[in-house]
Amino acid sequence: MEETDMRRMVVGNGLCMITEIRKEPPAVPAVPRRRGFVALFLALLVTGLFNVWLSGQCIRTGYRVSSALEEKRTLQKEQEVLRLEALALKSPARIHAIARNDLHMVPAQMDRVIR
Image (cartoon, rainbow, N blue to C red):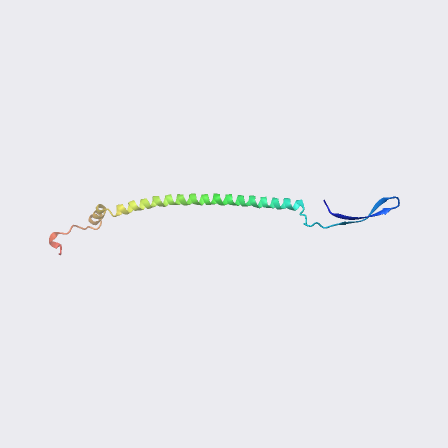
């Protein structure tokens, strides 16, 4: 796999002796496998943390929606009570009773009406 350049020298009775070994630099620098695993681990960690954060956001949003719906129901009930109270206060019979009993008012006599 690795490209090496070796120089050999023949000595005495035909034995070869290596005098120098030069290693050629690779055409594409190799990334150590450890860096790949670390990058993969970090990517998975970031993805997992993002997933946890996103789940938390969904849960918080659900609680906010639930709270808002409960507040809406409460306000609608209060609105209905206030509407009924306003109708009761506008009742002609109630107004007539307050005018006679509390304010001591009497119906006008026809000879006192100005036209």
